[in-house]
Image (cartoon, helix red, strand yellow):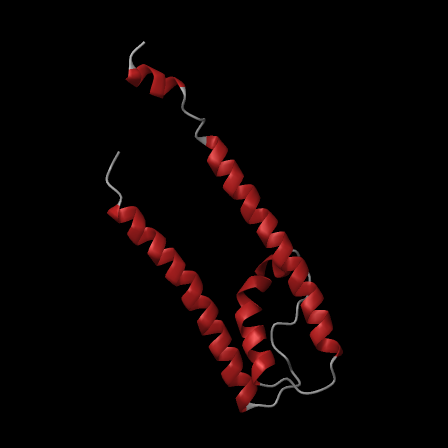
Length: 119
């Protein structure tokens, strides 16, 4: 048996990595959804108006509320009782920071795939 024949016979099925990544993404989404639910309940109990820090936190976590919203759970993604400008600045910075990290990672991966030599 030649080396090329041995390599062909030892390949993993193509569906295994896809299944593994899909399960990992679903587990991550469920974990984030559970954490968002607990966090929104804890933040709503506090009677003080939301300031810059809470705006930053809620802004960064807002995109991660999607799994809960898709399941029909009402998650607070914006505090009605806030300090005004400072809260809105924090919220905007949080959303933009989360987007920059997520899309920065995506573009980094795409750039890495483009530089990979064809096999």
